[in-house]
Image (cartoon, rainbow, N blue to C red; front, side):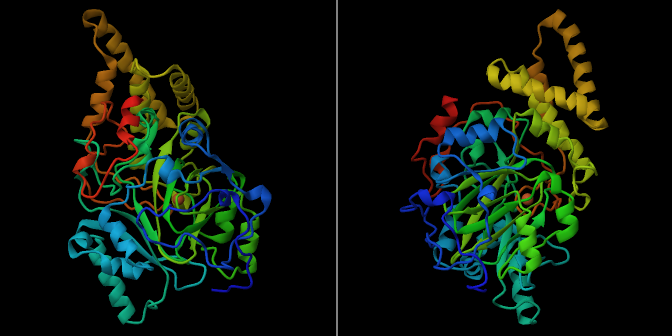
Amino acid sequence: MSQHADPVVPTLHTLDTDLDGIDYNCRQPLDLPENEPCWPIRPDQRPEVVHTAEEFMNACLFQPHVDRVVVLPDGIRLLKQQDAIPVSLRQAVSQNSNVRGFLSALSAADKESFKARLWQYSSKGQESEIRFKGGTKTIAAVSTILEEKENEGKIPRDAPLYISELRWLNKVEHPICKGEKVKTATNCDVYDFTALSRKMPFWERSEGGIFVGERGGGSGLHVDQCLWSNIGKNWSGYKLFAVWPWSERHAILDDAGKGKMLDFPLAEDTKSFLARARVMAVLRPGDCYVFSGGQPHAAIIIGDGISISAYESIVPANPEAIGTLIRTNCGKDHWKKCWMDDEELDELYEDVVGAVQGALKDPSTETKLRERLEMCVDIMRRDGDAEMKKLWAEEDRKAMGMDKMSQASEGSTATSTRSRSRSRSRSRSIRSGANGEVKADASSEGSTHGTSPEPRKSNWDKIDGFRDPMGICDVISAN
Ligand SMILES: [Fe+2]
């Protein structure tokens, strides 16, 4: 990597936050090496920065995110995510400075218990997934394939690596939400920070993935399979992150191509792509951030050591955000090579309608949220595609039927809607995260994201080495 041709990290938004003590037992460098190269970031391309959990959650829950990146420095601590990475993964990170070492440090049991995708970056400017035919992508399996390809000379032993979408192979009971079955391996999420998350139109938490990488790894240019937003959480390492304008959502991908890595030294064409970026951020250890996955975005890890991060996909209670969501798989708005499977999108829309209806019919839903959700409904009814309009017509028919029934027996429509949503069994795998490529897996279990209206019971003390020092469960119940 060139240390000369590219700009070095300038004084940026995050440098006003003291990193002392921000480690989360990852034992990774808290500072960048001197003269570490950086993307050239103009003042007008810098992200919005907020400094409190309240400001950030307000942005996540109620605001649109197109053409924005909102960063909360020290967000891991402020949002009580310090212990979210499982102890076994944190130990493997803490004992190593690169991804190969991390993989080697995992126990045989862990390698069989987690699945993930593995990427290598031996070709400048392009990400490449280490693929194999058949079988389950356990960490054991992808590690074996990596070793074989290295022995065959097909992958250089010093090629940067990136592990994406690391999660449990099989569903497990969520460590803090009794009865909730998930594949996400994070012990808690921003989803757990406030009960309002359960009343959002969409919040994917059951399949959230962990990402582990090193300098030169990251996510090539893409838009997500669904025009939702992402909450990123960065426990260790530094990452350069960029989003391109909504107005350039097709042009930048047509010009640069899907998977383009904006790495160092920067070629002239790469500089021209970066000059077109809407927002660029240097994400530091401890930062959390939110952005729209519906516009082109890319990331590359810089600095020494291991980066470990995770994402949650959401749709806030905001009519503009809903208006963006319902453009998914529409050729005018969504770059076609990144489309979601239509059947999965139908199911996602069904979830959204069910979640919004459930929140609106819940008498405890706050007025502010209720008003925003009603505005979302108006947008879905007015601008939604045929499937979306069909879902609302079905809701209308049910409401009419329930009105007739209620005249006889004062029934609860809220209970009816929720029961239907929770009992649905299906096969789908919604992928969030920086790679944004849909890979359906074979799970036939129902998704549990965002569907539980019941107060959560604390189960923190059952996690080995896990603690709840900040009282996150109190936060949940307080809401
Ligand atoms: Fe993405």
